[in-house]
Length: 560
Image (cartoon, rainbow, N blue to C red; front, top):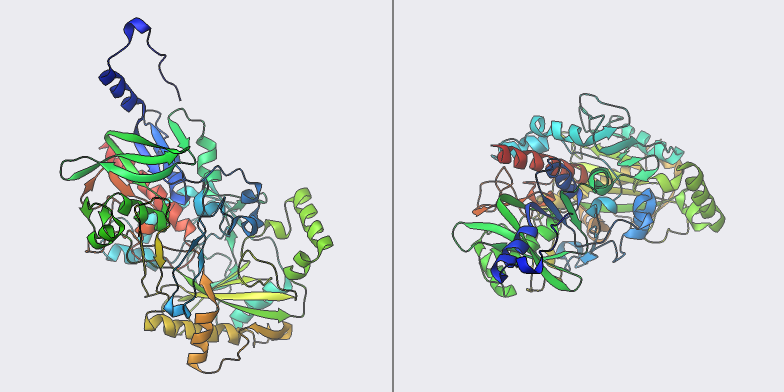
């Protein structure tokens, strides 16, 4: 960043003039809050024009931890306060009053730097529904070009994939007999085999695609930020914890700047006339920052001791997440449990990765994916499986002492809604997360069907010869209520919070279909929080797409 030389003493300006100069230096065309999956895309695209001065603020640190870049490194970065916000949900009645860990990335790349590397876009019908809700420009045909723009698929460009984008997407190279048996079991259950869940149709059983290249993680920071970090018009500030967005006094409100804390003191940066602030702090951080800035439900703000600047009743509401029900089985063939629990084998895994960038350390969080219909009369899949040839009490912890597999199943389109709200004016105080899992009867019914489906798979000709015993659940459920209790007691978040700053025009909507915050000028939101409804699958790919489309709309408005 270049600044003019200090003036000669005889040319020193008045205090007022110096103050104006300081504001000019600390002003930008675009200020992006949050360097996560979407924020890194925004920083790249908005700084392409050297005339645009762009500031990217990230509360976490640099992505210099080597475990971030090793695919299996999420075992080291999850639950690590240096790379994970380590949120926890409130005790949830739907889960028999259990509280869940809610990991979120606290580093450049956000959650794309600590996630399981699984690249899934969702169903065509998800985006068509967004359009049917009144959000022009968000149908599947509208968003597919932005998915393709981002993507550098190792198999090259096709009708559904991009070949020269920033985000590397690769196919799964590892194959195990137990993985093949799990796929064959799904086929026995009536699910077709698939080699591309992001192609013409989602339904099927096969291997995940990964955001990885040459054995390394491809996070949003790696893909979009690293190639442009030296642009003179792009400034990246890490360790910059946003305290609030500032606004003009006149109505309607106009976002004028961002106040953040760095190195123990508060700083304020300003957005230039005609510029914009883009809030990209995720489904937890974005509503939190809005509420700290006085935007949201008056009762929530009053309880937290925040002055109301603008009423938007949907801020922090309509929370959705995918709840995974994790079933564990002991099997009669070696799994990753055996390799990881052995010091010598673990050393071999490390050596294999160092020499060839292959082996277990190059794997994503799950290997096999299944999208299935829990009822034959459904038009599209309503449940998703994440299969792992390993087992632990929950991700990131020690492996079980036996040869184990994990069959994790989640409902794709839950009807239950929760909320996220601040309870203090302190920006460092985590908001309260209340997911309300399984509060909708329809979700309870789907959970019952999902658990039955998963357990029936283990009785197929393909998979049953490998099964020694059912470790989770250990209660031998029989009735619907038994199976629902399995879901309540043996489920975890799958790390997909969305919809807390919904896009739309109804009373619960926070942004319009151009992602502009209702009733406020020069402020947009671009992250998973804007999803009108959660997508049917993993959310990272959709979040990156949102960053691409937001950038396109912002630049188009600037041009016009």
